[in-house]
Length: 180
Image 1 (cartoon, rainbow, N blue to C red):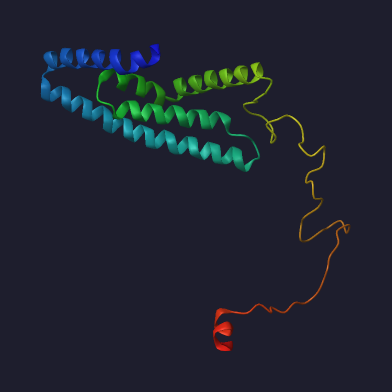
Image 2 (cartoon, one colour):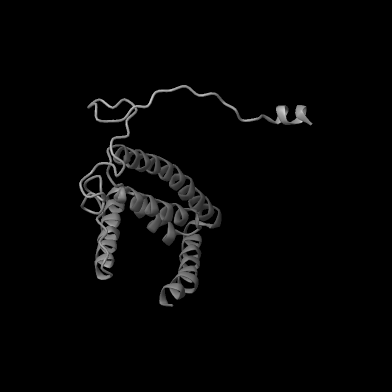
């Protein structure tokens, strides 16, 4: 309840107070221009950092690793982008902190630590990085594939190869119409 109170009542009042104070110091048009400028810079940074995070996640997936850190960073980037598009200097400050790589990495590490701790408390373990299997062991008891070797070009000679020919005997719509 206190989080919602902060987000929906206290935060907008604080934003309005800061906007009024800054508007009184530098003028209304300059304040509006500054808010728009922070939104444009934030969108540019979000695009740049978001693409870099997406590429890192893709590389980790291709190497068979779980991209947990990149997913957490992507969520932080999304929150930061939303805060930057929200008019106000307080939300812009927090949004820029979410987009700066150093603070974003730290926030992602903190989030992953909390996920791991929360997972252990419910007798479920979430490992946030490392090898190809996030659960620490091979799910099929040491075998790579529960159905055995599935390569069409079985190189070790142990696979069964069935050769044959087939003829398609299914009726097409046109054949059915011609029979009537």
